[in-house]
Length: 125
Image (cartoon, rainbow, N blue to C red; front, side, top):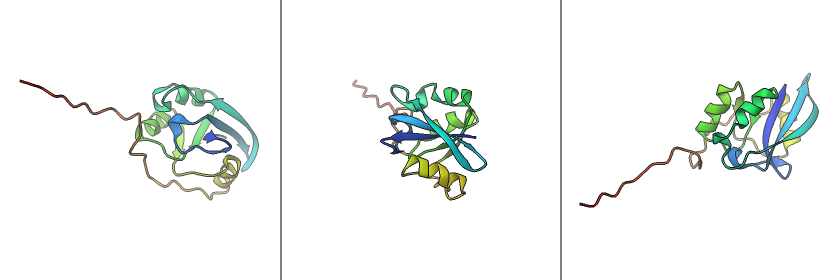
């Protein structure tokens, strides 16, 4: 199994779509075998092709801090399960997930920059 974790300075980045990079952790038999990095796309992650890149390399789980509904839907449509509310050291988080210690907090980021904007029109007569 491969797990992706939005990362900045070795810890979970608090925002999926604007992380420095993704740590990709390869596992087997509930153990971490190796880790590598995947570059974060320019701009907002939910509007990029990052989900398809992750699917291509076999990622099936995303351990995220804050993440918006649009990003969750995009990742899910590419076969990637999203666990929200994660924090801390990425390697420890990966092992904790494998040990069954990580539970999705069910909260979706409500101030996500990638939501469809609401337009206000001023009409002067």
